[in-house]
Image (cartoon, rainbow, N blue to C red; front, side):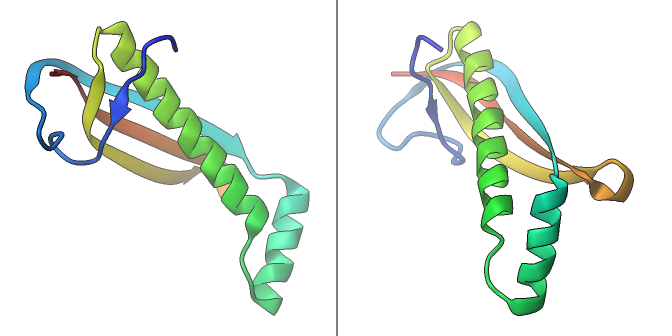
Length: 110
């Protein structure tokens, strides 16, 4: 992505005016759960602690979804996305896949 697109979950950027609304943009990432991660997460569930492998995968999926959304906004000529919403879902047999979606409104801010 060549142009920097600013992202916010709020409906506006404080102190900046939205000059144009360009439409809704979105990005998705679907990642599979690795069997070894599943086993280690099960052990963590039993003994306590954080499931670091899952946290890393979740963070990667979130970054991919946000990057795809920002790239879609840049293609429309936007320099920002406002009102971002992140959603997380499990898919597949046994909830073996994780989907992260990001959506928001592409805008031009001054």
